[in-house]
Length: 82
Image (tube, rainbow, N blue to C red; front, side):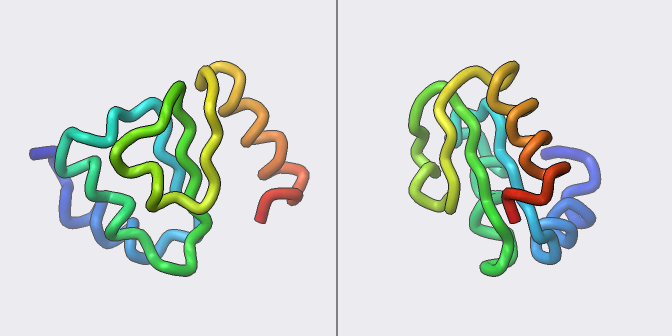
């Protein structure tokens, strides 16, 4: 169990953006974080392939994190994502 799970769950329920990067989607409790995110949050999964939790994300990007994450940051900084 991760340290600080209570504050993590509180942050998930109030966040406006949630990104899962390079996860298998099968190790809990992290695999269940998508279910705890506010329904109004913009959710993004970045991974090399689909996972068991992929369907829970609004935006799904397939590829290497070394390429996808910098592109995502550029979109966020430009205000063109959300």
